[in-house]
Every structure is written in structure tokens, then in C-alpha cells.
Length: 95
Image (cartoon, rainbow, N blue to C red; front, side, top):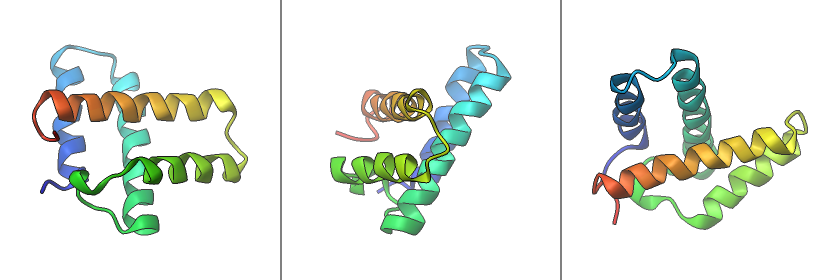
């Protein structure tokens, strides 16, 4: 089992190595750490292998309930999570 925090740090290295804009990399990582805090504190999930589709839906619901984010922002959060999990699968962290 691999802790989500460790995987986020690993994920962060790729765009940095590819020379992506620091601002974009930082925003992605901010979104991922905000999701990680919700998963840990709100759901008790700390390992990537424990994440289920329902937990992602609960996060989306939580972001909607906050009421300070427009749909576009929420969609960007979802897109970041999707890219993160695709990365985990492609790097064989998840099956």
C-alpha cells in the first residue's frame, strides 16, 4: 500500500522535469493536497489503493456544498484527480 501524500510528491516530479510552468504545477498539487486532506480527515482514507468511486463523488459533493466554487473550478478539480489516477495506473502504482 502506498500513501497518497507520497504519490502526490512523485506525481509532482513529472511536470517539473518536463518544464511545465511552476504556477500550473503548483495549482495541480494544491488541488491534490486539498483532496488528500478531505480523504484523510473526512473519510479516513490515506492509501491510494483504498480510494473508491463513491469517495470521489463525496469530494465533489463537498466542493459543491462549500458554495464558493463555480462548476468550472469543480470540473478542474475532477480533471486533476483523473490525470493523477491515470498516472498512478500507468506507473503501476494501481491496477
